[in-house]
Length: 452
Ligand code: UGA
Image (cartoon, rainbow, N blue to C red; front, side):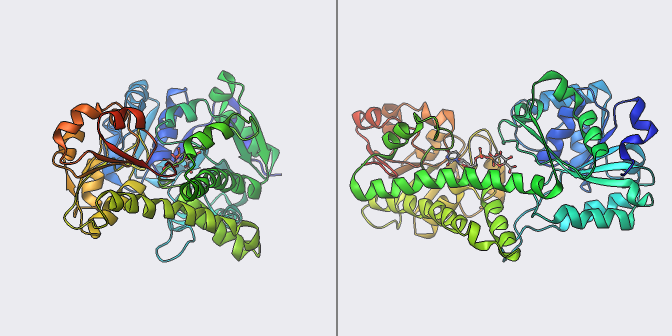
């Protein structure tokens, strides 16, 4: 058995943590662990990012996190560096939190950053340590990284690898990290499990968090299996929306009726424009790709349909706007409400909202976008679109208003007041966020996916 947990340094005090990759996942993990009392060193190759974090600035939008960063820095338990040598010297447990985006031109996950981070760290591991993968990876990656660690680390096989998938949701990242609904420890030895329990002691002491201990492969799979299930649930209700459209039935009432069956439940059963973001879309594609490599492609072939249903919702939303515009989008003024892939986030990765706004623009419409927090990111990636500084401003003179991200401020708009600034009272509710009765009563033509 490996002797990771027997390192004298870790038996007498809490393990010291490094968090490699201080993006969304890593920054949240580093900040929350420091607030919970652990000594943490955040490591990133991006010096600007570490400098901003060290100065108390969270480089992305996440409710509650800026306050916790300040608290963690003030405690003296959180620092940031770009130096992997410092990381190796400091840490007993090293969390790998770098991104695994979709590879350009392929459905596979791009493991460049995971491999680079592991190699950079390994060269400085000259005493027993536990490296813990948190990134979402294709099954089999942990085995590959284990070999890499043993080959490159001066401490050789005294460096062990574990996998601890992360399930945090953007917008709820703090809550999900401080009080996760489960912890999964993928390990190859009881000593690795003991080190992980010590690393998560503040969470485990505070809550009755279920811990599922598995082998490395199962831990890798748990994450993609969870995200695939969630994506499937969303696409399931959106497939029902397509059938509703063919029959005149109402998918929101259908979803409500289904949700009361406790075996089905109402969560992730909200129909509409579908899923986007940096996780669900790329994870189902990478999972299918990896399963095919392993000869199990048939088992998850349905994920291709889950993806296709999801894409069709975007196309159908464009169609609804075109129908309201009388069949031709040329010169039609469209107010696009929302850019982020979901509310309470400034993340625009694979954002359905911007995909639809861009498609409308390419079809000849003049699109003006407004989002409460994602404007800078949207402007950077979609400079061809126009941007307004408020929801009302975007809607001014519009022929069609299309709600694409269900921010609370859009839900609360008074349709009477909005009616005074638009050219035509026509709305497409891409997220079932508005009350059709109130909007129709205010003289609006209201259309939504899967509703008569
Ligand atoms: C997702 C998972 O929910 C997390 O558990 C996971 O840790 C994370 O991916 C990840 O892999 O890191 P996130 O991408 O933050 O989290 O967003 P979700 O809340 O899952 O929403 C994903 C998309 O589905 C959004 O575009 C949302 O608008 C859409 N959605 C969600 C629906 O269209 N309908 C629903 O009923 C729920």
